[in-house]
Image: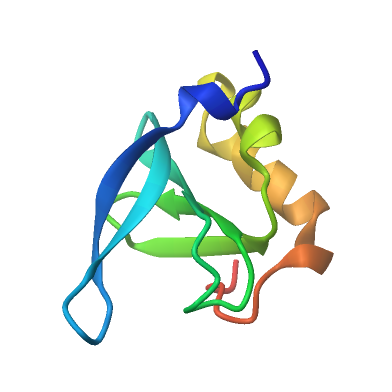
Amino acid sequence: MTGKEFFKQESHPVLRSLGIPVFNSTLHGEGFYLSYNMDTRDYGCVTTALVFGNMEKFLILAGDHREQYAALVNKGFDACLEYFKAHIDKAHEYSDKI
């Protein structure tokens, strides 16, 4: 398995301006989740977000980082946050600041 299989398709609670739900693939950890969005319409590219708590913080990387995050999710939020920091050069312009 590559890690991508651990992400499941679900409707994300954020709606586009036309009221169309955004379908992301997500992987849940303890107190956070990872969200992969393959739709390029809103962000201009595919994105992978580390989402803290109840959507309190969105740390978004441009590109597909599902495999890397899947390997870290069981190590907890801090391990995923370290991955984000190590790839800060790929942070999307819409990402929240650390």
